[in-house]
Image (cartoon, rainbow, N blue to C red; front, side):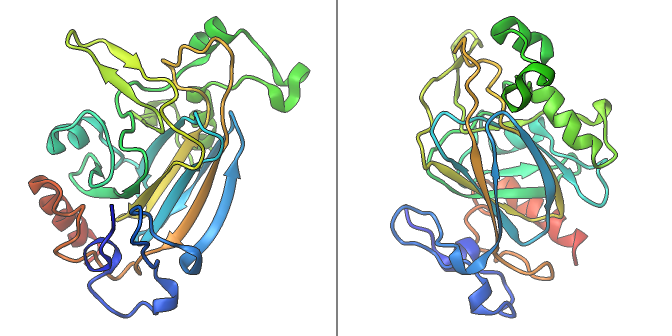
Length: 273
């Protein structure tokens, strides 16, 4: 699936130098971002990371080995009481999974980030994150004192460690998105983890429409039936799409993917007008 430069990545203003914008591949719908890359980082298997992604930046997350899970939470960077709202994101876009075209809504009805590229087609926004009790029951205990970097880390505590670096705590932990994981919903409402969903090299690109604090963990998905603790590493690549004083055009794919998204982008643009 190809991406149109005019509708996918180009901002309304033309003030951004061409050398700083992400050119677009016409083959599989993933932009070629070498010229626009700002930074890269490897998040090792079973560890955690947090950082600010400013308006106009995009973040590519790459599954390096296959089978990754990236539990991720989102907050407005300068006012973290505004944060990702799972219920509004799903009901406003009439979906139970996330892929290209969908956006992530804050609890103020603004668009925090847009999924502008995705090789996988399904990411889980429903199943939450595993805690210490779940992981101990499934994998046993492996403490840092005995196992050093091979210790077992659960997703919930990992996210709380990262949030603590930014003055946030337990009461601020919101519903997360599990990138690279697929959970099917049965007719009776039961959630079923789909194994072997993501392959090595699969990726997803999030374009940030707000200044956003992102915290993530690469611990296994809470519904992963594998009895062996086997997290996977991912690569983060941040690249510039537009400058903070610009905005995405009226014909942007994500902006028009659902009627509600148009209103969400208008709310967001008003914040940065």
